[in-house]
Amino acid sequence: MDVVPAGPEALLIDLDGLDEVAAVGAALRDALDRGELPGVVDVVPAARTVLVTAPGARDSLRAVRTLLEHVDPTAVPDRDAAGTVELPVVYDGEDLELVARDAGWSTDDVVAAHTGAELTVAFGGFAPGFAYLSGLPEALRQPRLDTPRPRIPAGSVGVAGEFGGVYPRTSPGGWRLIGRLTDDAPVLFDPDRDPPALLVPGTTVRFRDAGRP
Image (cartoon, rainbow, N blue to C red):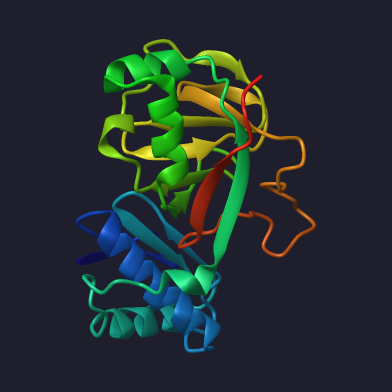
């Protein structure tokens, strides 16, 4: 674990991978919830780092460094604490057959593997409410498209590299699309909700097969 300043009011914690990010991020969020880090306003996990921000509260960053001396980055965080979200999917994505072919599977196999996986929100990014989901079966860990699409509809479900994800709003993107959320699926991002993002780090996500056209 390497801790370095990120400007005068933030720290960047450099880690070895997603498991360590999950452990350190959970420990910091727990301490924040207990009121042990006054002045810290955000704990932001990424693929290999955790950013801690404390605008105007440099003493809090010293408290963060002290806390990190006692954090075990190999500890497994309590996944139940963040809860579970089930998302209904219609598996009719433009790249479903491509994903199946590259996996050496049928499209039914892809659906079965995707719905059978217990995924975890590793971190958010790209767009408000977009969650990077870890835990994909190995065969579904496939590269992004060579040419990104200029417009991907909101609710599209895809895979890219080691991650799964759902586009919370219409945007460009290069993920391989295997399906789309149903119209009655939970809203992924609502600025009037607390927290606005439905899928926060540590949340367990399961996809449910809602059929095909």
